[in-house]
Image (tube, rainbow, N blue to C red; front, top):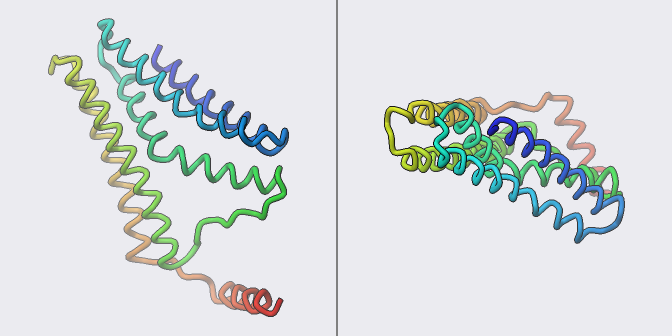
Length: 194
């Protein structure tokens, strides 16, 4: 049941996102679109309540409960950034706004960007850990909660690997190709002349 609910929440996320962006930019109803986008966190509340009720009804804690905690954590850590990114692209393609800038590609600016993304993963791992710990306390049977404890390790392993990737951008910053630096400088000079 929990896996089906996770899938339904993921599908619901994309449906609400598409409906919200369509209302904002195609139907010219920005308030309705914003209201639909603000409904997205309710999906995670539904998943959280359903998981708690499943455990309360005596269900054996298993990988589905751990996956639900990680899904909620991921949504908290990265959901806002995902919605903001898609909103920028929808505004460009559907609303006539300027094309959104992509993430920096080189140097310390890229390292700072990767660190911000990693902070989202760190938030996700923290939220998942808190939810898993609450579930462990709620079940209150060490013999039945080993799978939930394993998911805490999974959350922090993902955060650790992502942290190493972000750290690599600080230690070995990616350098722009020589031709691209010249093209970028020429483009900046041209925009200054205008």
